[in-house]
Image (tube, rainbow, N blue to C red; front, side, top):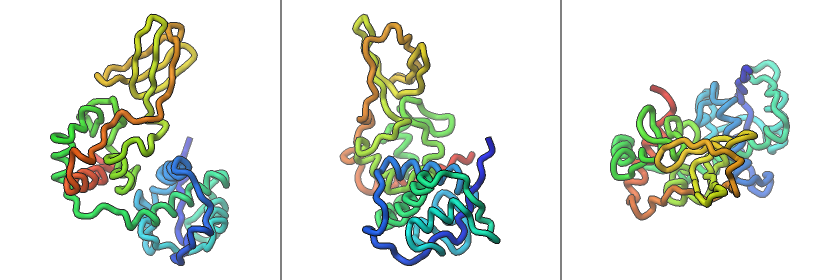
Length: 253
C-alpha cells in the first residue's frame, strides 16, 4: 500500500499554547503519534521536523493554528493551494500526531548537549556492550531491538531516558514474553510473533525459538525491561556521547 506523505507546511503557530489548553495524552499515545509522524511526515519535514524552510517542530518554530483542534483539522483536511494534502488519517490518530509535535517542543529544553558521536560509538561497541543485545547494521545480536535507525525514531531525550531508566517505558514491540511449558521448563525472550499453533521469541543467547502452544502451560508478556540501567555504569559525559552516537543513526549506509 502506498503511503501518502503528509506535508505540514505552515500548519502550526509559533505562539505558545498554555499546557492546560492542550488535551493530555499518555506516553504510549504520544509514541503512537510519533510512529505516524515518522511513517507519513518525515518525507518532507524530516525526523526532527526541520525539513521545510521556516519550520522546525523540535524548536517550536511553526506557522499556523492556535488550538489543537485547529491543527487536527488542518492535517485532516489539508491546506488548499499549498503542498499540504488531506491526510486520510482518522481524527483521533491525527490528534496523537499533534501531541507528538507538542512533545518535540516540550522536550527541547531537555536536549542532550556536549556529546561526541565518535566517542559514543566506541562506548556502544566496547564498555557499554550494547552489541551483545542490539544490532547496528550487520553487527550485534538480536535479543534487543535493532538500533540501525534509532536516531530517526527517537529523540535524544528519549534515548537518554531509556539508558538511565529502561523500565520507565517499554514499547509493545520490545516487550519480553515468558513461557512455562507443561514439563516445567521456563523460557523468556523478546517477543516476535504468535499464531494459532506457536509463540516465537528470541532468547538472551540470540536463538530464535518457536514454541508449540500445545506444550505451553502458561505464558505472559512482561511490562518490565531486561535492559540494565547505565546510570551508574557510564558517567554523564559518556551517556551524552552514547546518545549523540545513537541520535546519528538514521538507517543510512
